[in-house]
Length: 94
Image (tube, rainbow, N blue to C red; front, side):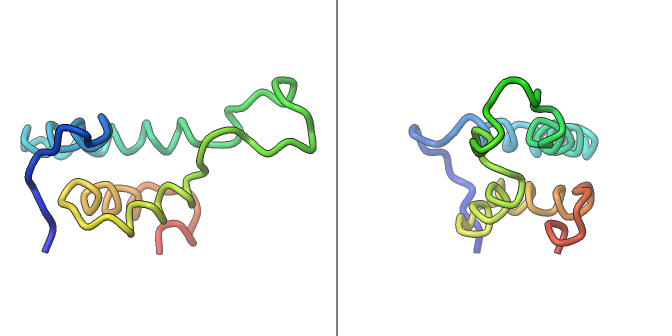
């Protein structure tokens, strides 16, 4: 069962999701998830900002989604549900 208690060392991402869930406005959470997906879109990275053989910095949406599956909290479950509905890649949505 997901855990809903607060931890002082938890990431801001989870605190932000908890705040959006508490607002009881579904668009708050969906907007947040949409922003995460957009921020991780590899097309947003400038092709001139890194060498061609250098991997992109930061996690991919696949990697972030996989990390959420390893953490059993209400917040990560909400993020996964939002990603499942909004992700552009069918494999990520699965």
